[in-house]
Image (tube, one colour):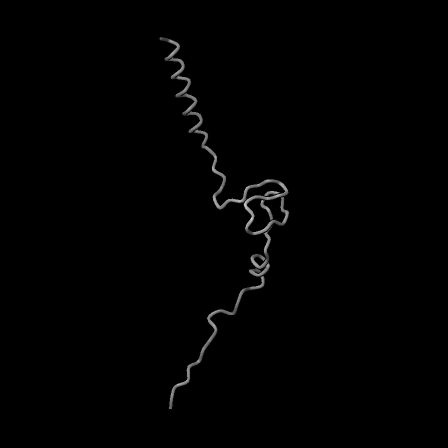
Length: 80
């Protein structure tokens, strides 16, 4: 007698919360909250640029070091 295979669904499907979050064609702008298309590169309402990378700011120690080096260079050049 041949064995019968029992197939089970590996997944029950998406959860309701996932459908609400990812199901639409739009998403809210992180800055102003207006709905924009998922594929939009920037918000048409406020101009916020959508980017996967976080906003990168220069650390304060880099600015202080660069300013100190520039001031030292100018000081040395003026002494000549």
